[in-house]
Length: 439
Image 1 (cartoon, helix red, strand yellow):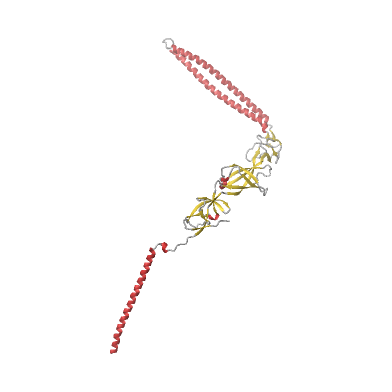
Image 2 (cartoon, rainbow, N blue to C red):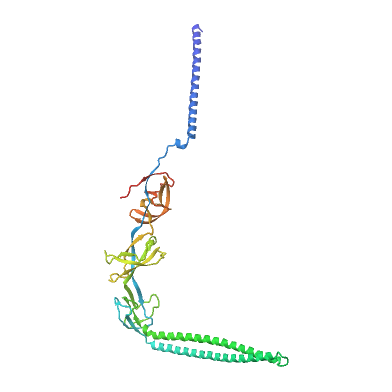
């Protein structure tokens, strides 16, 4: 090796040693930076996790809902209800006894007055029935007289027995008093006298029982005689039954017999009457009022109605009879109105349309129809109190314009949402916005 190479080698060794020291320094610095970054990240995570959620999380936006107030007002609405006109009185006329029509003085559409003769009938067996009834009366009377004579005979026997008892008791008392002195009266005589008195008393008791029994028979015979007399009177009255008169003033609406027809009393619901009489000067208007509207029914109220036969013309009736019970099938209450029909323009069987006023005894609460939400489980409105929502279950009533009557845990002036939906959950915080007044 030359001196020049030796010098170069000496100069190169210090240079390699400096480069090695510089690389180590960079590595140390890099590790330190990584460590510091790691420590900073961990510290940031720890700080974030220990801070309150409301500080770190962004505040959600509170929804705004449009609200209105519950209003209280009197219900005043008219319902259109179907009704039925019926005759005020409607009677099917049958004869009381079987007979033949001798004459008939009316026909369908005839106007009759109360007590007017409608039909005259005849019954050939009347004479024989009267004779038999009178014979039964005489027989019952004879039986009664015989029993009364028997009662009188028993009474006479009892009087005789009472007289004999008095005499025998006197004898017994004297013998008993005398027997107090020894040897005056035999003891056997006293016993015989006592036996006679007891026998007299027993006979009187028997006669009393006989009299009571005979008296009971007499009373039975009196009732029997009375019954036979009434039967005889009924037979005698058959002649008056054969004259059929109108029970009230009205119109004959049905005739089913002619002169010579055989007619008799009704034998069942399917029996055909001789005549049918209806009172049409006054009619009954029967209305079935729904359960929800019966509270406004008042006796004496004047109600209007129309009929298809006279379009555009209004008639009136007065509430007279309220059934005060609901039909279990229809949940309605029958109400009857009296309709004066002196002109006879209206007729039984017509079906009028009644303008029925719906009222409540007190003011009701109303909300807009859109404020009511209905799900499969409930019907409710959403009330807002102190910025919080709550569901209030309600029941619907009548509708008046855009408002609906509601029943539930609500008060006048309660704040409710204009549009109810199950998306607005109970307990939500909301900002309210008052709806503009309706025009």
